[in-house]
Length: 225
Ligand code: 0O2
Image (cartoon, rainbow, N blue to C red):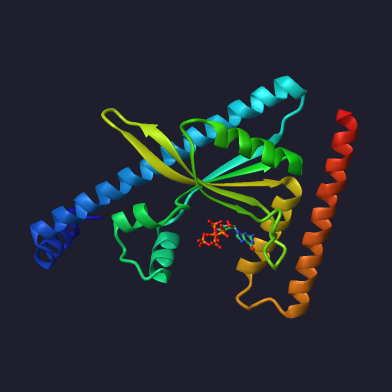
């Protein structure tokens, strides 16, 4: 931007907002950025714990129970939509107090049994607190979605304090993940609802993926035997 234009924009902003309002906006952004950094630290903590478990199990059993780990921070747009849906104010404390999935860790395991082994080992750690568990593997969603969802708190150690941060951990097998990823793509790419036939077809695909998991798990236990 040219210096002259820059000056005009600055002047317009200064007359539209008082210095107090601008200062408040700056402070608010700083608090939001800090909170997001804390969530990022919490994801790193959980990711490290999972890597350690994977290494330990691979030493013990000569194979890796975890295929891959993905982390994501919820976008500001998604947080806004969710708060509005819940009828809550768009504020930093509303995010901290009411949203459990700002920090998300997705763990893709090799076999269904690994999902529970990793979840149990993570939950046994004395600095991890379980807030909520949703077992969509034992009780799949009506559309066929399967995964194990945990909401946990994990401490992050800052220079002068310890903060407990909430993290959503989704554990699933490769087969569950491929179904969920494709279903997500289909659902979000089209701006129309699935027809009943499409919903039924998706459910059949989910059942196929569940059967694949069960058969692979049976093979895994034979190899172990
Ligand atoms: P994103 O971008 O993945 O974060 P809530 O989380 O409270 O809004 P709910 O239904 O109580 O809603 O939570 P739940 O059941 O624990 O599921 C939340 C997350 O699980 C979703 O996050 C998805 O990641 C995943 N999920 C749940 N159901 C489905 C499904 O039918 N298909 C697929 N592909 N994923 C699902 P977000 O916030 O939708 O999105």
